[in-house]
Image (cartoon, helix red, strand yellow):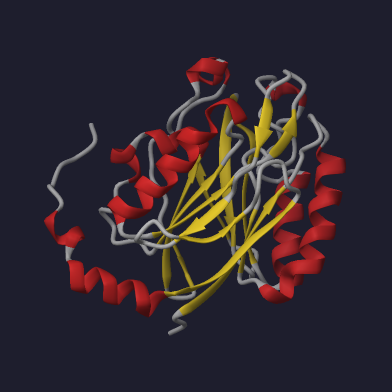
Length: 259
């Protein structure tokens, strides 16, 4: 069973509500990166930016962006992760897709709607956590505002990697940095945060500050403010397992349920 996982996260300035342009940008980047990655992570709403006008860009699960992700994963033999706006049963979802190299697609609907931006008024929240098994690793993918809720992120499933895709604004970037480190330490898990950069149509600024952290909260890879580029690291499962066994912190968690 593989003990190493090669991770790449792409930090980028997203073109507002323009899936065609955004997909073309990411396709070029993925073509250049696929040989050094098992898993490539894109930001939250990577095809549109964090829009509260889902009618403008919502797709079905058979839509162009979903098909694009599946095609890229198969062609480049990678797993691909990112969120987009999906319409289903007359509801809109901020849905994260985890697409396997074979094209198999699993998804997670963002549980915590960002009320400050009115996300709760236009998007339906999810209720189920997703744990993906990929190359012998257990991966928990979440979305942006979920980062502020440690109970939802809690490592009750003994996952190995925690992922947050985000459009986290620059004005609160210190919280992003602090909470990523906290989630890594308290869950004894590799933790990855992939954020966007640039200024969106609502004049919100995003500084990126994407990072890959180990289970002790130490940075393995990070990007400077407003930098177009990638974060990448090779995660070694046996190293994390040894630290978990030696310290035993996860064994001391209280047992409780989210109601």
